[in-house]
Image 1: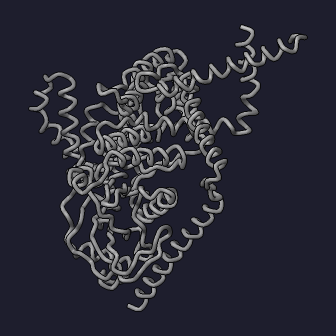
Image 2: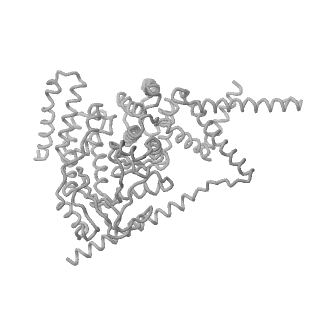
Image 3: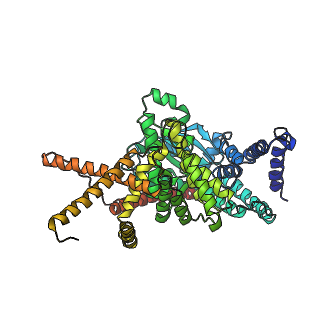
Length: 452
Length: 113
């Protein structure tokens, strides 16, 4: 066993042992024990570094694969690490551009704005005006942020993935993780992290987002400064605003949080149902409410993609929730790769019906998270494999609901989705290919009704 | 079908009336479809769709009436999506060229050192 493998195993075991008193040495009720082990794992992951912080974040979006306690614990994973000294960050910039930050920017602030496991962010101002891919030009002196990949982060993550691959392959042979394929999960993780390590990808997604929302002045994203961007350095417009944790200040400043909640949720649905490209790493730190009454989407490190067919099937599943139609949900989930064995369909359908009936909160609004996460859990209980991406999408929609509720607690995300999904499906009805396919059936059904 | 023309038109009218009543009822159900009103599965979707079509019809009616009064009506003329897409691709290409130019400058600086 390599020293890193030993360290991983050691830190994890120590983390679990430290939780023994909380689990009352195994004598506590099952859910208390599970919560204690989950906490131990989370603390160990935070200690083990960037790869494990990212792994924890991946677990937090897979309630279909992991226990509620583990998912909840990983959602509280802190991706904030002590900042690196400015000289280290300056050295990365110098290595990328063969120039000091002062030669590249009018000003560069050595005090970091934020420091996470993969990157550290500093403020700067542009030395020259720049015309971005989309949107108005940024003038000289414009405030920008410079995101810099921490030196060694990529190597450390790749190294840890290689070690984890050996451990996971061994684990898979023992039959652990019967319901999920740990090697496939690791592969998915490795692909996501690789994409996140190349900051140019993030810049491209931000550009595309700006283009997609070009007709909506209330949804914004930072403009990218390409001459000051490489795979390890991303320079983008500085977005001023309030985080969702600081909404009182925003309200005092006259921001209409209710309108922004509805608009923000609609904007997300537009990403999913219309464009098939969506921000898949939404959390309160990645959304700002700005003084101009706009919503700023930040950090496009993780983006989900959907094919036109997937988009239409997901719209159908959403319509099933809006109109409480379990058969529609099952039919189109199957199209998305969620194959429920024939003999389990009645049980899953019954569970789904209960979920659809139970999505109303005491205030009368409906709760997407209850439905979406409950559906994943239900499929897990019946050993139904969930395709990669499906869980992530449901989690993303649930997060959007959480974010919208933080802005305006009484928002009904399902009601917000109703006109959207109905319009899209209504539009699809006019598709000539679909008309050609369905018209004979429709006429037959109408005749059947007439002669019944 | 009947030979009596009056009878034929009466049947025709009745069919339309029944269809109209059915549609109005669907619109009403769709409009009422709040948190507790949507338990009808596929039928509920049809009602929701009918309510949205009715909204669209009211908009169209208002536009036509405004036009009849000689008022200016803003007609939504969506830009060609394919053309917009090309514009974005060109802009994206420009961004890439900016990026490549910067890489070349970096390479030159490194060579100069």
